[in-house]
Image (tube, rainbow, N blue to C red; front, side):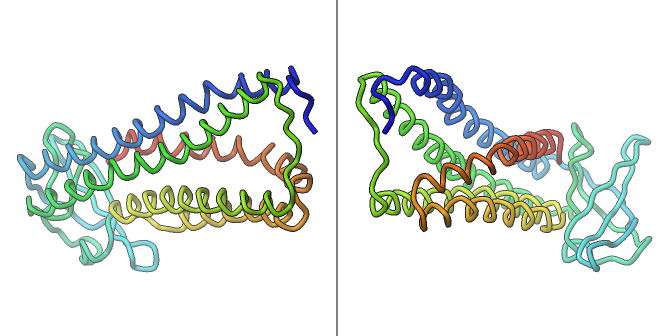
Length: 257
């Protein structure tokens, strides 16, 4: 049983509360801004995109992706898309559309309605993705705030019964599953839109599922003590790794097409 008014616990909760609260606001806003920014760029492409000639430089992914290059004002740019969007042979030339103010943004067609449709799809998912992420992080932030208030009030917190703990575990599992599915779906959609391989998405999903299973299965079988021991071991390396991957992906999205 945790000692009422435990200074160490209060200090730990106090230290984490502002970070989690900030994450619940800033990360959804960042996600919304990234998706909205891409939608605006696609709308600009539909409005005043220009056509130029490109040529196929390679095919990868077992014939699933087409790589092509084109020149704007003497500068060569390259991009890759799904084979279905550019089913051309190596060296074959075809027309693409690019954004004049940012020639690196390109699509392998000169059809404004397609760019408009892609932009609309992005806008429709932007607020849903942001709301889902905000709900997930906000739930954890609220739970931490409640725990902090209870600790400051000197309310003893003992381990729940195994039945109660398993019930909480089910709720947590559902929340985590929704969050993982949401993030994986967004990355998969982004990869498909760019003609990239889905392998990194599946690898990340497998790692996430493995980490969750490694914590939740012992917890469901043996209760909080086993969960705390296992999660402490895993989170020591999993959290820094996950944060690092997320930051790299965020930077890639910021500088991507």
